[in-house]
Image (cartoon, rainbow, N blue to C red):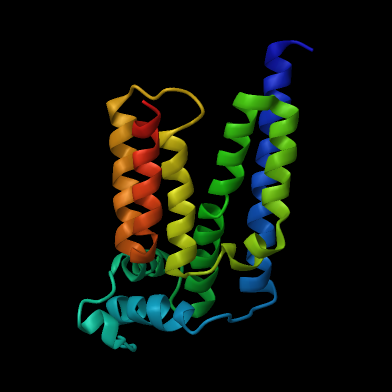
Length: 205
């Protein structure tokens, strides 16, 4: 099979996996709505609603500066964007869910990229398929929770830092550092993991 045809086939298969993972992650959020933790509302949607519409509950963690406004701020941006079409939860909830479901495809794509470098495209698609249909990743993937969003960003940062080959681009390393910092701001419990991940390449050298 010519290289270009193989590349097109692999890209089409990866795109299909990405679309499948987005659709699956929308099911427990939009099509069969469920609430796992109150944090989905009171630590993300409600503060964002206050920023956009002027009313809503702001928990004490935000009032005392114990939580970052990064996640509610991002949700507020999506809410404001949805107002181009119409006001109300019928417009902003699908957009928020779709945005976080799209972010949740990061582990699928990064897993594919890692596995393709080491084992080839067929094995990479198989590995990415496992991540795409993993039940726990489907159930939590599209939810507005700091630990979920931070974990997805962490995976992207790990791939930027170590894609399976030596990284010499300072821009790439700088982008990885920014994402690691964002992870720490969103979920301070991940700081030890970020420290180990960043030190590990230096230890190998």
